[in-house]
Image 1 (cartoon, helix red, strand yellow):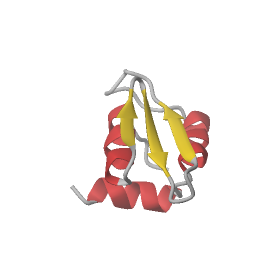
Image 2 (cartoon, helix red, strand yellow):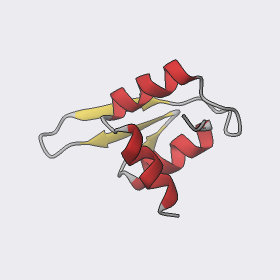
Image 3 (cartoon, one colour):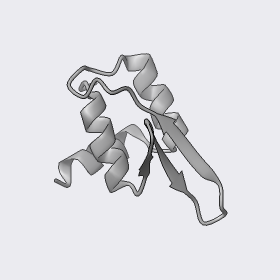
Length: 73
């Protein structure tokens, strides 16, 4: 698996429609449900693999979709 940084995660979530709320990114679904994803301020550091998958799960984003969002730049 390619490694991702916390900065990469911020970019991908922003492109997926998440909005920054303090130190986390939230997305409001059409049902009104809010998906919060907590992020570290360590932009250039790699996200540990287990935490990476937990954050993807919180955001309801697949790994393939995550890397697709990063390539959109």
